Length: 64
Image 1 (cartoon, rainbow, N blue to C red):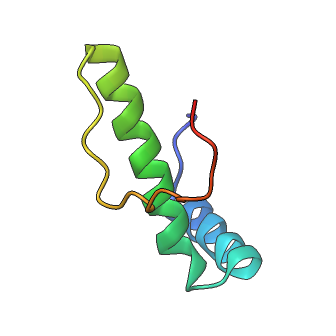
Image 2: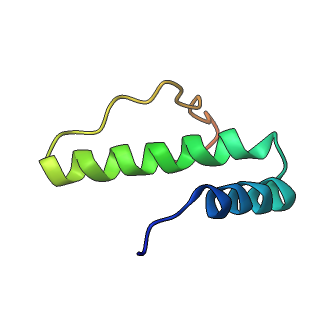
Image 3: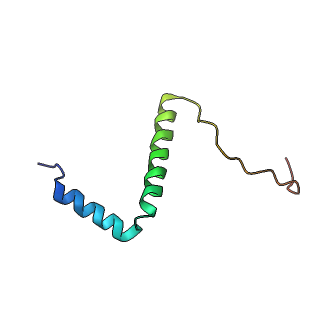
């Protein structure tokens, strides 16, 4: 009792496809996975991984 069967999982997948579309589901899963990875890293006390892309500094922006 309390477990999800095949029918329930299929219904959940169909509802997700209906609301978000097939193209958005991988993006959402990637975001959730990154959040979980970040949370686990914080729990272990590890520093976050370096970011792949940092936007260039705005030369006209005030510093300080």
